[in-house]
Each structure stands twice: as C-alpha cells, then as structure tokens.
Image 1 (cartoon, rainbow, N blue to C red):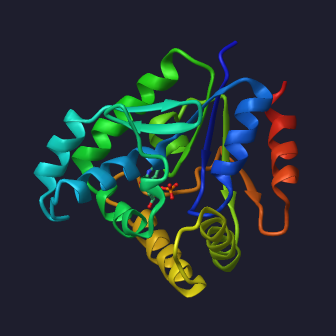
Image 2: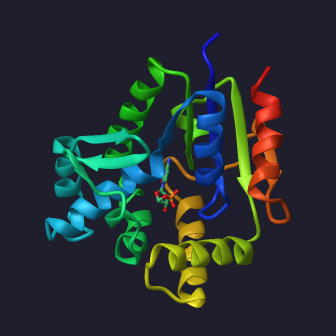
Image 3: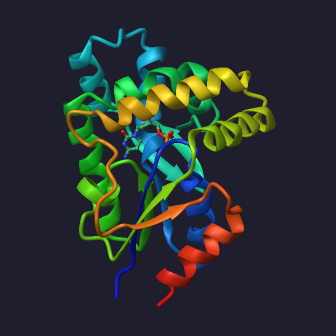
Length: 215
Ligand code: DC
C-alpha cells in the first residue's frame, strides 16, 4: 500500500525536523513545501521584484525549477538551502505565499511529487488542500514562545543573525498571515491527529508519529 503522510503546523512547531527523521526511519521521500515558497521568495528578492508585482512573481515561479536532492533545496539547479533561511527571506515569505496563483502552481507541483513516491510532506495546507486523502494526517503545534525559542536557537546554530524578540515578532506575524490567507490558510482539520510538542522532545514526537504510521 502507498504511504502518504501529511503534516501541518505553524512555524517552529518542529514539523520539519520531525519529518526529516521520519523520512529516514520509514523510508519516505521528504518534501518541505515551505522551502518551495522560500525559494520563490528568494528569487523575488534576487530579481529585484517588488512584493506587489504579483504577476511578475507568478511568472517567475512558472519559469523556476525546484528540486529536493539529498536533503538540499535546488532552485534552477543551484543549491539555495542556506540562502532561503535568511531573515530577509523569512520576513517576506508569508506575503509571497499569499499569492493565490502562485499557490496553484506550487500545490500542483507538490501533488505531482506525491503521485509516484511514498512521501512525508509538511507545510500549512497539506492535510487540507494538497493531500486531503493522505493515509496519515497530523497537526503539530507548540506555544509561540517555545517556537520562537527553537527558531532562535536554530538561527544561532546556523550563524543566522537575529534576536529572540525579532524571531518572536516574525513568528506572531507569520502565524497571523498563515491563518488568515484567502487560500491555503493554516487550519487544523478534524481528521488530523493533534500533537502539542511544547513539552516533548523531538525524539518523543518522532516515536509518537512513527508508532502510528508504521502499521
Ligand atoms: O515552514 P516554513 O516556515 O519554511 O514556511 C515558509 C512560509 O511559507 C510560511 O510563512 C508559510 C508558507 N507556507 C505556506 O503558505 N504553505 C505551505 N504549504 C508551506 C509554507
């Protein structure tokens, strides 16, 4: 039987870290849909396109090729894994991801990626829009302070400049934008298993999910 695992949750809820480990443990292809929106945000900045030039951003997305190889994100053949995590990109990505036509393009690509492989895909609208018929659906959550703490620590480890206050403010803004999008907003769907990871270690969350998907 095909295995399709969908995980949604807000920024910093741990879904990326957990999905990566589960992909290895359970032999699934890991698809980070946030990285796809980030790649387009990065390309928008690189091409000096303003955020209100939505048609240009959509055209840019149509011409862009996004691939995931060995845990890295490639944009038109170039590894942009580090560049898409900068605060510059993080600050604009939510706005970029609100462009309805851009979402249509990326959702189509994501659905195609899940057609031919056993996948674990994470994002904001995976359980609701991209893969509503996934065999396993999860919603991962944590308090905003805990999520900001995690992202700040991650930035420090990666050498990305930021302050805790800046990260918390960005998380609050992104939560608001992500939950109030016209299309593809972050919503907790009824048939997704809810996991609050605030007081859980990564390993504990992985074990919880693995027990469910390894049937
Ligand atoms: O998961 P992340 O923080 O890397 O996601 C980056 C942004 O992309 C985030 O602000 C929400 C948006 N996003 C989205 O709208 N839909 C998805 N499926 C994944 C991410």
